[in-house]
Image (cartoon, rainbow, N blue to C red):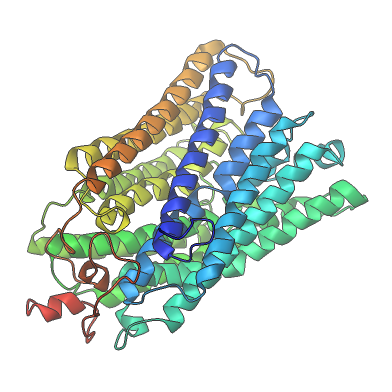
Length: 514
């Protein structure tokens, strides 16, 4: 009889469960987003504070980074050639802390009045009078504590993964030979360890303000402190999901080409550069808070974009040798298309068609912080499906899921962009629907529904992949150690680990090194 999920230390089971929970919470947040927009089309949003708070708290704390860390929990030990994480039980503690924090956030909405302080994480300045109004309400107690516990769980995940990469690599697998995804988890995980404790401290101060009459967010410097400590659109976490995306994408390209990356150092430098430059976002201060292209508004915050561009150029350079079609290429190409849209919106801002503080602003932040890393996570899930469930994701399912998720998120962004271009304000309890604004709100709701459909298709694709478990390297061009493990891997991961003498040990082992 297998070990209970409640006490298991198997990193693969823990990671899979974390992925499922993160996608489930994405669905809950999406339902709140649909309710907001459908009601907005009628001019009045009932329970506005509660709905926006639930949506923002879940998206901001419980979806993107935990989703990527769930993928990393499964894949990284396999890429390192080890049979477990550095702290097996800590991964279970982090998982159940994450689940408990999410349950507290959702459970807060069973109380009256419903909590609304979750809106804080996507607002660049403190909501006027919100902290005083919310003091000592049980629902907001659960919400703030849930976000705090969720953030602590994220830090524990980062501690475990960074330590595993540092201490449990196979013999010969030096830091400079790490697979790109593990490299991104190392530098991105260090970023989480440096940044997220500040968010935890900010939430703690919110709690003190609410319960003990603190004045942290009523002083003259409140706006700047809020932007640095609370607002996720102006913090490194908004970009760290894209760090993991670049690492996963680099491994996908390597598998598709079946060749060693001739620009290995450039690729690694670009990934590390994005993780490093993510902290430059903090230097923007309150100046970035109302930015319509936050967090990329001033020169300093363009640096992460340049670092990501370097990595993408290294991918294109590899493609000149030819490419093998694998299912993950579709979502990866769509992720790049999202990047093109992001650059396009930066150009549109300079036409002065968009007004800061309108419906455009929050949609833009969500596009950078959520849409791009979410579509990238789909590419990673499809690519490592053999290690997650045992078989290759059917190409049709991978394509339909990724097109639906990318298309739905783009539709959501487009509705917000058009609202912003027309000067429509952010959604509020009473919202003007004239000028076609009500129709655009419905368009955004349809976009979210399409994303939900895409997630269901992705789940069906995983069911299909599980039914045809097979070869350790079903693509035939895997170069890193995870492709030496069976699909799905056994509890001990490896019967034997190949010798590692380069960053592409399986390519060397087959004598195919170029």
